[in-house]
Image 1: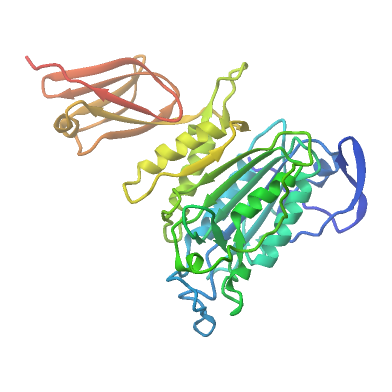
Image 2: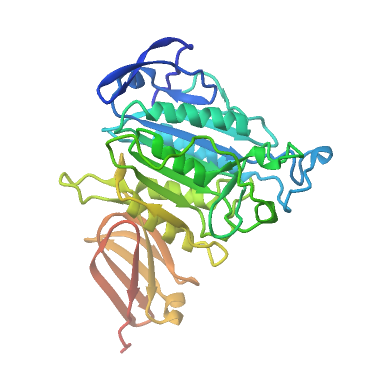
Length: 415
């Protein structure tokens, strides 16, 4: 059931920020990007979760945009249809499925730029469709700075950042995220871009000690970045010192390796977004906590993303992550685990009848077909059986747990 979606009230001056045990009076910022805001939770000063979601598909100054406004520094890049869909998909998940009893969801900012259909977001919990601000640098700067301010309320806060759109790099170091107004300024096209490494460093100055970044963008070397020292704009100034007593626990989940491309799908969520949702829904979880509850941990999510993306063929490169291991999402239901079943001889796999059993109950089965048998089943213990003519093989009482399980069956000699 979707959560109710309160909105922040009008701009007002009131005490709402607690830092190191003292109250600080701050002006609550107006923020048109907020699709969800629990102001009472923010005002309470209790630990909470704050998210900012950015999907950039429309680039007026790149190929396929406004011909009269095309920048010379387009690098062959053009319009995208997947990022806005991906951003909405992540926002849906946050409003419908995110669960952290220790740090409940307090705010979600959404910024979207797309060619068709406006920038409207629909959700059952909203009284009316939400018009998301365009993902220009100015709007993103304001939304991110407000996001950081909300994170400053409590050092136990959790911060979530998601970006989907064009990314470029000068080499294996650094990453520039292109926003929708990239190339607007002839003198300084990078005014419409964000230096992601600088943003990440700057967020060390945020009180929130737990931070996750999901970056669904190419990291390939491009002339856009390689022929200049400009790397995009800085939103939050960094410092050599963290002005808080808490440790800075951060995890960055890139959709691809440094120097490689990422891939979207026309008018559908990107492959990375799809696998990220799968990981958040259970393949990136474990139940090693004392009470046996299932939590998504950063380390487990990294493994789940790597395995999930690897299933989409060699064109999709391995994701990369930089992380501190911590938990941030408690599952609302038991995890479903992807399982791949095959025979030890490839030719037998194509001809085999497969059966998955839980006790005496048949959970799933498959008649002979080319390729390995791919199923998704709840965690637990199962028997797997393969038959080819009179030959049979089985694996009994096999444990199936996230992030995945591969089962290879050796057939006995026929009689």
